[in-house]
Image 1 (cartoon, rainbow, N blue to C red):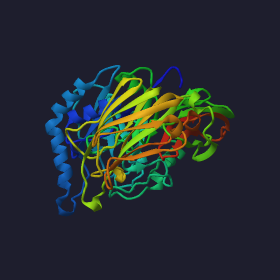
Image 2: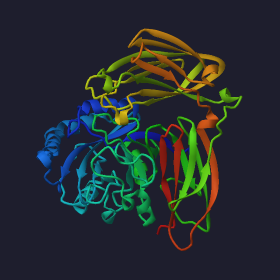
Image 3: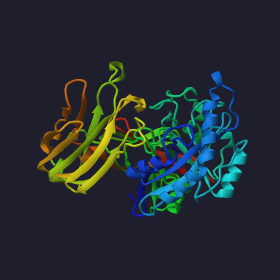
Length: 497
């Protein structure tokens, strides 16, 4: 990573019961603080051109808008109180809907700011300029007139980035993975994708956020963003976003360093006939492919080796522990299962912990907790259920970055849902996973995944690209892991005068 910056992970588009989701603002803040560096709450505020719906269903939205207005002082106070520079940063915001213009998330740089109704995007933009606020469009690729983006009114002034992934799906391209299918607005429209707008010469960076309505910022798989920041403060985070030093993630906290002629992601540079692209990627799972994309075409690919090298334990390894599964709805046994366990390392040290927390089921009182007692013991409190599981995956997991020797072992001391103890040798986990059950079918299960060596999760490469002489150009990086999780680094723009 460029020594000037540190990577901070956040979610700047999410909802709860202060709107038409569920959960309190206090719960959202606690959840965000558990596993994120920063977040912005963006309560549902207005849909100025909403049409009457069958059976009066528009009341669902209208009541949500009213709830936000009624509780806005409480939201303002909670966000202001939550902000702690150097530890955790919270931003105030709201979401503005529009069938014609597409939805926009407004993020304030300051606390205790007002809600603002607007009849169109230009009016909303004038408010954001006056407030020095961000205005970020999301679920871009939905059809025009169905809350898809309206690129015709795009302006960089307070929109340095766009949200290309959320729980709705992937708006990078209309043929990419993770399509829109879980809502009623339809499939992806080619002309509304990020790729189409970049081809037209628009300039913006990439972010992702969850848009979860379960009061669970940073929900795994629903969208996450990373910002390359000089410090962990609100001004530093906003500066990174405005400079487009951001990248979008589906869930796994892939670390990305990407530059063109030494300029970091999001830069706009003057270039000659050729540029050098360089990147370094550290995934949380085995990497499938890292791609350099120039003007909509893949121009370079890199692959990590698949074989486990004999010296795999000389460098830090990554190991995922996953828990959940359990009875599905057809068995009429859906339940919330509480988990408590310790992971104790012998002959190994836990260097970093990456929680991967699903949003469901909604529960106002339950929390996920991770406590690294020392480099050899991690204590976890959690819960799982197939009820309300995003894309039907009920599981929770954690990725451990570890330094281990060949004689090392991990002991799992399970207290709930049952008392159970097991030991897994690192040497064995280099070859195969370790799968366990909490009882007879269809009880819950838990699993140590096979170890991911550094060589399989990391890539560093560079390539040279020709620069068109007759037009502007842009270059960005796309990363895909073998488990399907992805990252998109903001483009570097060449000769955009």
